[in-house]
Length: 143
Ligand SMILES: [Zn+2]
Image (cartoon, rainbow, N blue to C red):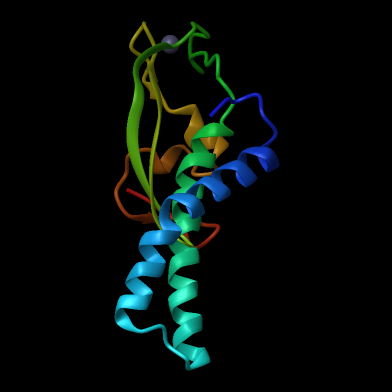
């Protein structure tokens, strides 16, 4: 995805693509099982499909909306060196697990490391790479 596109345009494009990619399979599964007529059961099936789409949209959009950082060391102000352009992180949110990647930097003088996308996502430095710690805002966890 082009990072200069508006988020709403990206959202609409990705949602349309995901529905196009997955509707036929989902609907074939539904019809093979017998599409439920009970509203509660039908609603549960649709909710699960929408949850899967939401989880995938979150994974794609979360990475797309992070601005390209030019981080500096908080101690010596030297520009940080990127050592991994796609360090993985798993965040548990409302629609399940989001498997994300973000750039990982280190200070060339050895003052530590940084993953600026974590702060942009509101994960906080204390959650970067730490397993299963609940966030103070509730709901999401990073592992
Ligand atoms: Zn430093």
